[in-house]
Length: 101
View 1 (cartoon, one colour):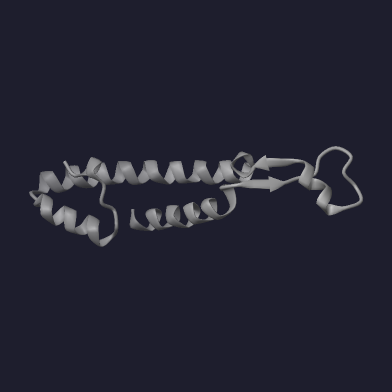
View 2 (view 1 turned 45 degrees about the vertical axis):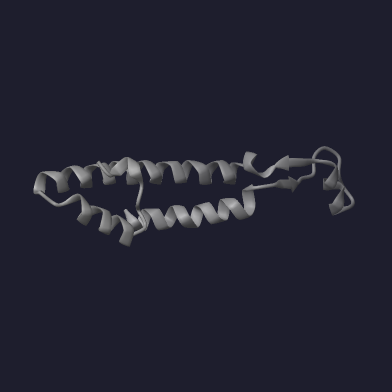
């Protein structure tokens, strides 16, 4: 799960760097000069690449959520103390109150 969380960190950084702003695009009859694209900008988050990054992050986050829920349930059944589980979560930077039951 920590590996998946690291993947989300990487995607989040790419998303933050690329998708938080506007992109200059050309549309219609905009030939001759590259800067003609300044007349048309789009929200970067609306690009297919950014939408795919969001979808990938949501998928990985759902897998982590299910895995953490299962880990807590198994630990509870095995008699592992909650403090031990929290220490493991802290070690792998996976602390979230929703999993600490």
